[in-house]
Length: 191
Image 1 (cartoon, helix red, strand yellow):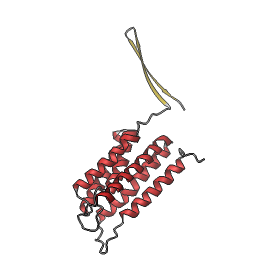
Image 2 (cartoon, rainbow, N blue to C red; image 1 turned 45 degrees about the vertical axis):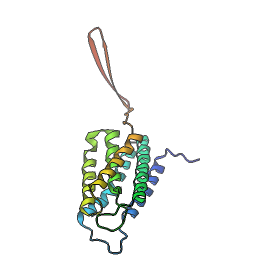
Image 3 (tube, rainbow, N blue to C red; image 1 turned 120 degrees about the horizontal axis):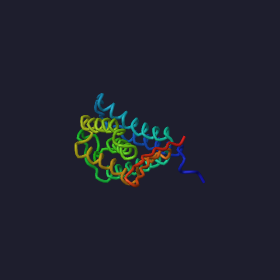
Image 4 (spheres, one colour; image 1 turned 90 degrees about the horizontal axis):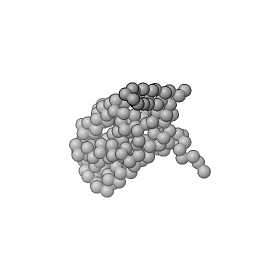
């Protein structure tokens, strides 16, 4: 039986998901609108941010985090596309009826939220900036309205509440001891 905790499996799953996401994001209307630079950048971030997030977790050998990210990304996709195909809200540009919620927004906000929850707010600031840009690019390209991107962001951030835990650096330990009015602060680092 294969080891489903292997980083290789997580990478394959995320690659398949991102390929699927990219294919679904392509405009299939008979008269496709002209694609602007803002929309192109948003499309690149759709793939780049989740890929960079997973690769970073694997580089620092956080396999547990990589699996948490992968499970959250799959849940984000399932909820997003379940709602898209169940609600059938018309897009602002009238190209199809898969507007609600924004898949681009849910995916990138899942990535930024994962970094925030797993590694801390300071590390997530760049992720939130590009996720916000991607959400704005979806409104600018008339693929979504504000409700679509807010719902997408909520789905992406919400999936992290189910799967993502705070990163525990096992090689570092900070201790505090007190007794008889004295305090001792200790720091241990294992190589």
